[in-house]
Amino acid sequence: MNLIQRIVGIALAIVLFIAAFIFASVIFAAAAILALGVWGWLVWKTRDLRKAAAQAKARAEGTVIEGEYRVERETRRIDDNDVH
Image 1: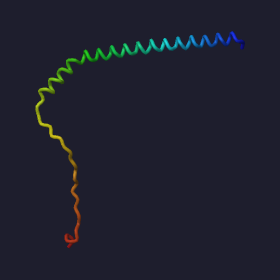
Image 2 (image 1 turned 90 degrees about the vertical axis):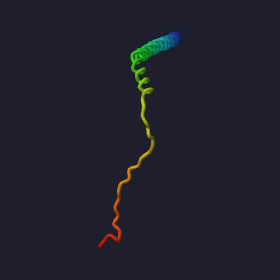
Image 3 (image 1 turned 135 degrees about the vertical axis):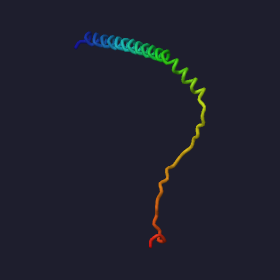
Image 4 (image 1 turned 180 degrees about the vertical axis):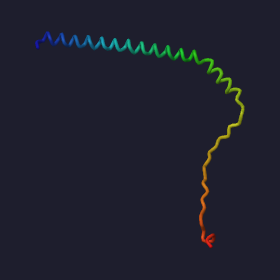
């Protein structure tokens, strides 16, 4: 290959790399805008549900008892005194 072909090849590679970078940036920006739109739509559609949940939580009455439990199984041992 002569010098001119190498220079044209390098220039073409740089141009293609820049074009790919721009294309990827546009795709990522479009995906971010779409995701933001879907998030906003979901927030808008579920606002009544969130209000109802907040009101139910405020009206909830009851006692919550917290603690731990352990299951103990009954074990029987045969002692020397029990054998006849």
